[in-house]
Amino acid sequence: MKGLISILIGLCLVITTKAQSQDTTELNFSLLRQNDQLSVERDAPRFYPGMKSIGIGKSNLSFGGSYRGQYEVFQNEDFQEKPGENGWWLQRVLMHSKFETKGGLHLFLEMGYSDVFGKPNLAPVDKNELYVNQGFVQYTLKQWSVRAGRDNVKLGTGRLVDPREGPNVRRSFDQVSITRFQGVYEIQGFYSIPVMPNAGVLDDDALHGEEAFWGLYTSRQRNTKGFAFDFYYLGLDYKSNQYNRGVDRETRHSLGVRLDRAAHGINFDNEFLYQFGSFGDESISAWTLSFHLWRNIRKFRTGLKSEVISGDNGRGSLNTFNAIYPRGAYFGRVARFGPSNLIDIHPYVQFRHGRFYAEMDYDHFWRYSTNDGIYDPALNLLLPGDSDARNIAGQFGMVTNYTINQHLSIELEANYIMVQDYIRESVKDARNVFHSVFTLEARF
Image: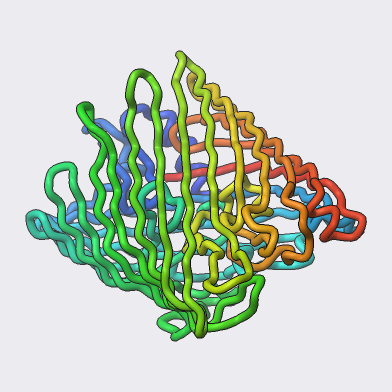
């Protein structure tokens, strides 16, 4: 398997380098590769565009893929000093094929390989030797589209439902969805079961009875005259889920609204979400309010993010907010804190010049409720609510990215977490955390 992966990596790098030397193919790669846009000039070399557009009668077949390699370093990963190895190499290969007919039939298959070398304690999102990342059939007729199969899903900005691009293994759902398009409006209804990844070959747990996820999502895309608007209902059912107050069955319903607009040179993207349902014999009442304001000044963007995310008050109904299926790197690739029981203030500055991009930010975290603990991005209880302190930590971050060409990019991200009262009281001999990750990505 590793020999085959090395060949694929080499092939990926050769194709991307040679294809760039012939400036005849315009590509727009998407996070979800089924949405790629490709324009091929008539005099383009056959070895690359030939695999992106293979005519079969009135239909089209294409192939593509990506390689991502990352070297990650952690110091004091769990706020404690750990002897031994603190750096490791992660790599991921995704290879896909897409078949489209003029009649509206669309078939998509994407296989994945994710591995890690040198990491002592593996998480489920670190390693999966061979898996079906996506595999679905879609039929589109006029303003309607029906899709069934395995899918990576992103709703809105990805605050709540995201493919989880940060970790080494993406999040997949086995689902059925129906979508209606009407101008700038889109309405999608779906029912899905998340795929549980395993480390072996084609051994992921699918169509199990542990979780179910469904919803109705309405969105209006921003255009030159207006604003972006999302209104949605999302439902969850967990056979067993754990919070600071205990473990029980959870059925949770979420109603949310998001508004994204530019006015007088200031852009804002704000979202409010309320959750209700049951946790065992108890009711659920939780919410979050998210603000994001920014302004573009030439090559710079300055912005401010802030979120208030409810935590459990320890009385009556469960008040801990469930972030549903958010991106793994919700507050940076260091991914120590998840969006539950938090208040945060997050100013940042971005700079973009040509192919170079840089960002610096600072994020400060407090507990919303002192009766609840704090959670990681997967909603696992990270530290219990055994302290009266609210001040959790301050996190400095830096990201630099250079796009070598339309196929190749490199990125360096670093984060430094300075622990405050709550972590000092909850962790013996608590230490500050340093994290960095270097990424090389090739796509074709």
